[in-house]
Length: 264
Image 1 (cartoon, rainbow, N blue to C red):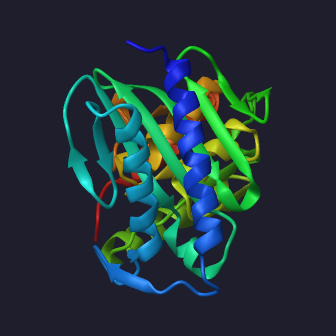
Image 2 (cartoon, one colour):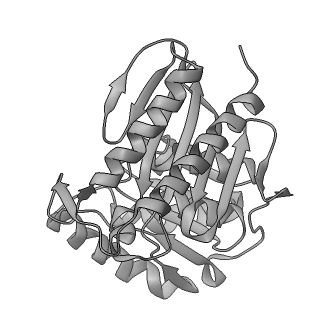
Image 3 (tube, one colour):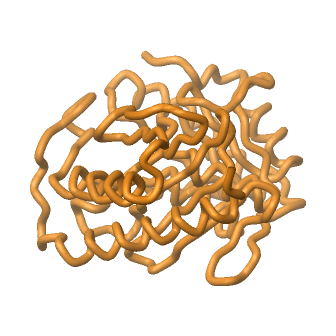
């Protein structure tokens, strides 16, 4: 079995190629091809083109591996599985905002061991291999430590359904007075990498799917962050919390009484 470093090199290479294609082919105003869970949950033709490119590149090198992609679902089997989000932050991509990314992670026997997040408009590719740290442009990343909750800059995001957004607004109203400020970037993968790079101190969100946070979650934890859900549960679409260990506990204890996993 190849090492995590071998996987991360391939993930980075493919994410860069997909990013170059997206920049080259993005029209001035991309058209919405379809919607998924709600009118705000959109897909463009380039989401699908990006995933098709990524799948083709993986299959060319590793034809026996499984692939789970946001647009194409799950294919294949075996010990190795690739987790692909061809454009994380499609609404930002649609509007020409700079927070969108190509995210590729690799699982071996159910554990994420490698990940690459290409924040394409910024020209930044974050990488991580299990036990080898998180990296950006040759520099090892470390998340911010020793930041108390009241001085923490917290990233979050919002779901697509009206009922979920109502609850998220209620939770946010309780969180905002207790922290330095809130940032809503629009890409979970990019938010987690920003945490790894010390650009935000913490992150929480209900709703992102596995392909949104598989690679970014590894980048964050390899930079020293803790990631999880409520009350010792693993992170999941129900809720993901991420921060340096001390701040993680404070943010968790702030969120838990608010029942943030519910929908209206």
